[in-house]
Image (cartoon, rainbow, N blue to C red; front, side):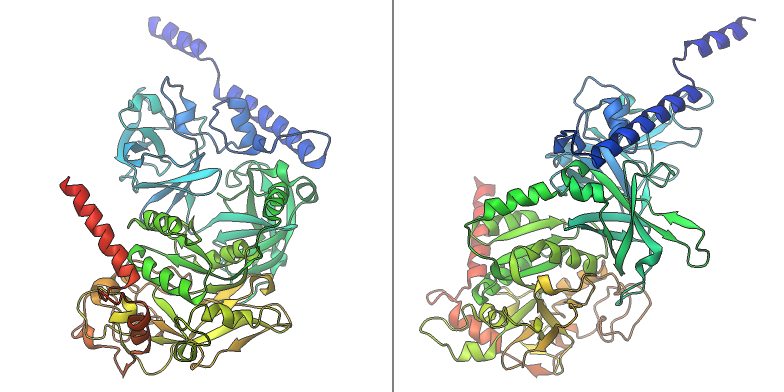
Length: 615
């Protein structure tokens, strides 16, 4: 009898039943949906654009209005301590879990822990009223993402633990971060998710994994659509607005913006966008992909930026975009050399580097190089990243080159026949493209690419790749391109560094005696073996995979394991080519010491570091 009374008393003591909770939650969502539609469809409601930005506020009403997936375990349970920023999305990769976090970058990643939960005995509460298992691991790294969000990388969860990771400050009690059934525990799988979106005029460009569109060609957009809403679609929660897709190619889909967002784009801050598609075999079946992509740009911001830039100098004649992973040591030589050739603006897309590249870019920026770093955590998405960069560069640059940091332009004629006193070749690449800036037919310049081998070396050359590697394969391998971004096809389709152009425009092949590219592709084994970790291109097979062994994307004769072949240092050497080396030593080296500009900076950095360590 006493036990029966205790059970009744326990039930009466619970403030809300599960049915009551979902009833209240549904009512709040419906009201939020209705208010949101009114805001989007009318100019009569003066709303501050910041209203839709991620907020560190833990107000339950606002959080549900913003997104039911926005709630974090850290927001669910009150704590007297300052809470870590809200986790908005979790994406599961093969080797880590990526957390999209509201607000600015967390400045001290070493003081941040990832919290994992074991739900094998129930969600948040086991049958014997014991708390679920909790495991804590240090965060791998943090990074900024955009103006409104940052990212945290966490290790994969232990066996039998959920990938619905949360965050805590090191030293906080795990008891403060117990999960609740009210918290959205969604984890997106990287092989099927919408991961980025950006506004472009009256359209939105959406980047997506999982559509499996055919590579290297346009796809039929009629079976696709964009959905704009407040919540996650993988839980079948309501959407706000739907528009048709107008183009689709590879991982990039372009849709019209809803009329209400076109009129009031500043009111769409933080809107989540996803892709819906019908089944190939059953058009009556419709699927909506999970999404971590939000819209933050606005026409009002663009107008402010245009006004700010009025009266400033015209567009840069020549810019460059590249995607890198752990190539910080190569940046200085690559940028200093190409700045001499006339490149004025640099877009560096950082694909999960952990070698100090952010500090290197900051140093170069302080030295006067107009360079910016874009965090791009999306694995094997080089083509999509270049499409994203083409949109960014269009308003700043007349021409944009897409090439890697081991690729160096060489202009034999300009180097040997200077048109004016002084160093030959200065601004030669910029002048080459400027000749076609007003062309009504040419929108792309293609240059032949020669691949160099280790050239007998066993360790990285101290003076840089342009001086150290001097032996190459005889025949060229592919080409590299410089394009006019405003004349690209609306699909932004690109393959191995060249883009599809607008109808009526064509590319120009530049003769080798005018310009070519030295590709230092097969470097010493110490450098080359890092390629086995992962390659950035979407449609290029990683070298550890047993596929396409005869492809030009692989090193001839190399297997699927990072094992140095015999006589690696002597391979890929058919023609000794010292043209660029001779030019660099003649015109870039210090007459007194013989050292090169990038070499001098590296030596001074090492000296400073040693002095700091000894003091």
